[in-house]
Length: 237
Image 1 (cartoon, rainbow, N blue to C red):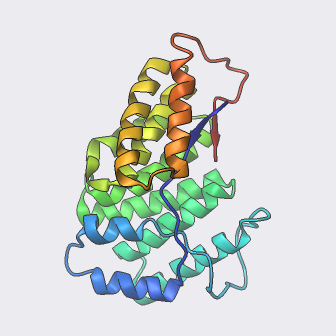
Image 2 (image 1 turned 180 degrees about the vertical axis):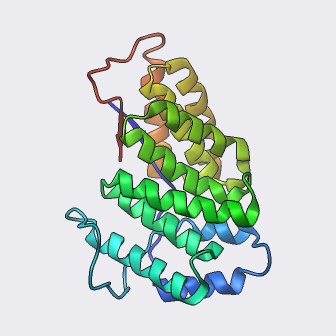
């Protein structure tokens, strides 16, 4: 069984309504615990108008998600500008859609754009960065860059627990990065922490709790065993 990473929970919303909600909440420095983190959980899907052309042809089953996320980026850019924090949130959602569609190179590009905007507004340690760092971690893992993934996940974890469910994702991702490198003891420690956070933040029986619990059981069975370099150590769900 391969280690699994999972970015934060996805909700569906109309892009126009979402941008309006973000505008109502944004005043000076947004309270990212109460507003920004909630907004960054949204992966836009239903009810959006579709752009006439796309630079990437998404795989079957992910067309609507990528198209709607692109439309949300377009609307936010038109209404607020390309350097607004809400535009950064929409870029993060597009990055997540790309990552889940199997386009990790595009996911990385859009997530880096999002991260740069948020850092300019709020600095390098703001809680709003955690969801973006989580996507960057997953992109790095899917490209086999496990050391880079570890560094990104460590940065997300260091920002702290105010990121709520996203903090649990960062902990899980760090565990998966260690597991991918054959460092099972370290992986188990972070999976335990992730499980605790997810059990506190998510409803009982949530699939992400099950994913973390299964990953923990796996690495606990394999202490000290070296990773097979010819196997797929990490699979993104």
